[in-house]
Image (cartoon, rainbow, N blue to C red; front, side, top):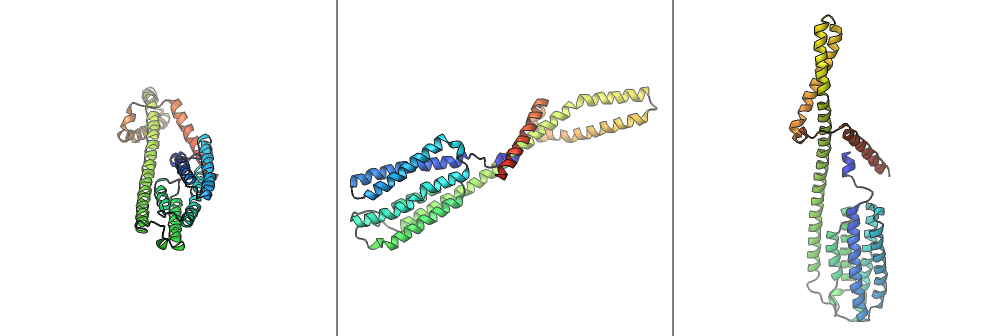
Length: 294
């Protein structure tokens, strides 16, 4: 039951929200880039290829909004990669186009923005973002040396590559803190789920104990009458006394639950509520077992 409560459900809303946010960012960034390059009239390839990526991001956004029940964690990771990886190609072609155009530009700006974006938008496993960070850094280093940017006359260096290293350090620190916080939240969530299950079970046991009080008193009265009326029937009295002692020992143990969960001293469950909760546990266990076999 606890594992089912704290496990990932087939529909993962947090991962979907991350991909949805990335799709919105891609739409905004590519729209601005297309408008800018159209006005410059020197980068037709950038306009054409970024338009394709923009249409893809719009279709992805529509699917995320109207088909949200289809997005499990694995699909969200693949969607995240499909939205992000094209930027590796755009980074390469943009630097080439700027270099060929003779326009002045600051290189590797988009790579720094991507690094920070990866620190904030995590679709699931953190290794995905770390891999993409490594990919962006490796590509920037390759572009820096392969295109010989330090010796290009139309490049505004602006303290590169020191600034890029600062961005990478900040991004790694951010994602490290996020990972630590996520693990802490998961631990607290599991502990809270365990406590809530134990709390509910304690409520069931205390309800059962209180419902045995009246039958127990009746049984004690019956034993007293039997002893008085039939003192020679000890073979009948002894089993009844043993059962009474057993029930009293159990009730004494259950009474300790009132000190652990005092809130339930007056909030007992009815038989219908008890059966409904037990059915809920059984259903949750079946669902969890089914999800682990998929």
